[in-house]
Every structure is written in structure tokens, then in C-alpha cells.
Length: 291
Image (cartoon, one colour):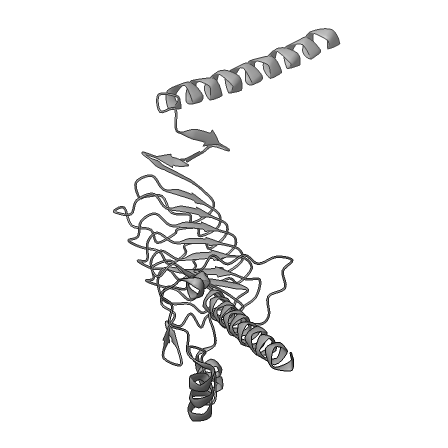
């Protein structure tokens, strides 16, 4: 009798498990008509909606080609937004209507609202920017205070002057400086691409520039030494050489200054050759007189 009761209990348990299995199997089978739907703990979650992929509490769920992963990632995103990728808690938290943004790291692009084409990677990278476009921020707090467009920040702090700063629309980049000026003391520097704050230490520097061999051309007008003396007396520097004041205000172009110095070396060589000829002629006259 005891064995019969045990068998009955086992049969009831078997029926219960069978019922549970087939009920769940039927539920999954029904839901499998939508292959993008997942059944979890009895709750239906939809981490895919059309072209959108998302995961995380309060993560965004709309916008063509969007991907939102993390707590509140892209939570305010609008359906009209396209191809945004937010990875990390609060990434793109305020973004509404914007396209082509990539934010990675907790709070990256957190206050961006309508700015597009931005890339911010790092904790709170691109923190202050709301509507700027085309910005790239790489590093912890990179571009923290920037509110403009088309800038590059590589930095690991909130410092206003980052290790590397760039302007994409001007094709300029600075190291430890944001002062990418177009003129220095009246000298045009608009064509310069690299600006460095502090010294540059390198094992080699090669500059392509013009050279001064034109001094040896037959048509070159070499000033007489008396003319050079007069010019120095009136101007305080050599002809075709910038003054101390000019160098102080504008600096010098290495290539151009090297060419000018070479010009003076070659002119000096011509003066020495001419003096040598005069000395030889004088010696010959002295020899003739002594005979």
C-alpha cells in the first residue's frame, strides 16, 4: 500500500512537470512567430524593434539603425533619429533628434540634444556639448567644457587645454595648446597645420625649402662692401636678413632663415674670392717693384 502511494505521488509530479514543460514550450512556440522576441521570467522583453537594438533599463527603443546599451542609454531618443550608437549608463541621455553619434562610456555625450556626427569615448567625454556637430573626444572627461563643433580632444582630465586639440574644419592640430592662430606679429601662419606649446626634442628634422645657389648666377647683383657697410649703418642688420625686432614679433621660418643664412655665406665666399684676387694682384705689383 505504501509503494502504491509513492507511485501515485511520482505520477502526480511527472504530470506536473510534463504540464509545465508543454505549457512553456507552447508559450515559446507561440512567441517564436516573432524571432526577435525573447521570453524571460514570464515577461516579454523586446530588445529589438525594427532596426533598433537595445538593452538596459530605460534605454532608448526607437530611431532607425540605433543601438542603445546601458541604464538610461539614449532614453530620450526620437524615432526620427538615425544610426546612433550609445554604450554605457547615461550615454546620450539627453539626445532627442540627432544622427550618426557614437558615445561609449558612462555618461559620454550625456547632455547632447541635437548635435550629430559626434564621437565621444570615455567617462563623461563630451560632457557640456549640447548641439555641437562633428566633435571627437577621446579619454576620461575629454572635451568636458567644449560646446562648439568640429573639435578634437584627447585628454584624461577636465583641463581646458588638452594634450591634443584639433579643428577639423581648419585642418589644424595643437599639442598642449588651443591657440591655433592665423598670424603672429603680422606674419601669416594660416597655412600652418601643427602648433606646439613648449619645446620640441627630436633626433632629426628635415625641411624642404629653396636654396641660395642663385648667388653664384652670373646675373646676381652682389652689393659692394661699401654698400653693405652703409646698409648696416642705416638699418642695424644685414641686407635681406630680418631685424631683431621683426624676429621677436613674428618669429622665423626655419627653412627660409636657413636659406638666407646660406645666401650670406655664399656672398661672403664671393667677397673673399674677390679680395683674394686683389691681394694676388697687389703681391704681383710689389714683386715687380722690388725687382
